[in-house]
Length: 320
Image 1 (cartoon, rainbow, N blue to C red):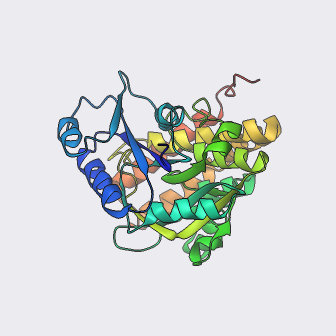
Image 2: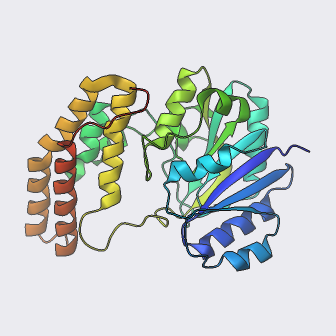
C-alpha cells in the first residue's frame, strides 16, 4: 500500500542526533503511514549498525563518496513512494503529531505544493523558518556588519507570518523541513544540485520554482519541530568560514539562474564593494575589545574569500 509520506534523512557522522531524530519520528507520528530513507553520506559507518538494528524498517542508501545536500536528498526523492515527500535534517526532533499535522494540512489545501513547519531552538525559542525571496537589497543588508541600532534591518528577508499561529502563504521555507506534494515534485523536479553542490540556497530555488509552476508554498505553525541547527556543517574554530563563502557563492548562482546576468553581477559587486565597510566595522569592534581576536581573524579571512569568490568566472548551467 502506498504510504502517505516518504521521509528523507542524511547521515552526516552525527549518529546520536540522527538516532534521536528517528526515535522522535516513530514516537510522535501516529495518524499517517510513512517510509523513512537515510542516505549515509560516506561516514564510514559509525553508529549505522546500531541504528539499523533499532530501526529495521528504515531503508538505507550508502554513498561511496561525500555528496551535498541536494544530491543526497535527490536520491530519495527520485524513488519516493509517498503521496508526499519530506526532506528533513538529521538534527531535528519531531514534536507530537508534527508530521501528521503537515500531511493533514496538505490534504486540506490542494493548491499548496510545499509546506514548512514551525521550528524551535532546543530551549523553545522560535527560529526563523519562513522568508521573503532574495533581492539585491536583502543581500546588501545581509552581508554588512551594522551598528546595533540597525539590527532590525537584518530581518528584512524574514516573513512576519512565522510569528503568528495561523497558516500562511510565504515565499520560501527553510530546507530543514519541507513537505512536497508528489504532483508538485513531478512538475518542478528535484533539488538543483548544480546550483548548490554542497548546501545553501537550494530551498529558495525549489520554492521559487514551485511558485512559478503555479503551486503555493505555505507555513504551517501547528506542526512543530525542534531544530538544533548547524550540527551537520558547524562553523570552523578558526580560519575562513567555508560554508559562509559557499552560501554566498550559491546566492550569485541563484540570481543568475532566476533573475539574469545583470542582477548576478550586481550581487557580485555588493559582495566586493562592502569589504572596506565590513573591515572598518570589524576593526573598530576589535579595538574596543568587543570582538575576540580569533573571531576577528575568522571574519577577515571569510570576507577576503567572499571578495575573491565574487571575482571568479560566472557559474554555468546545463540549460544555458
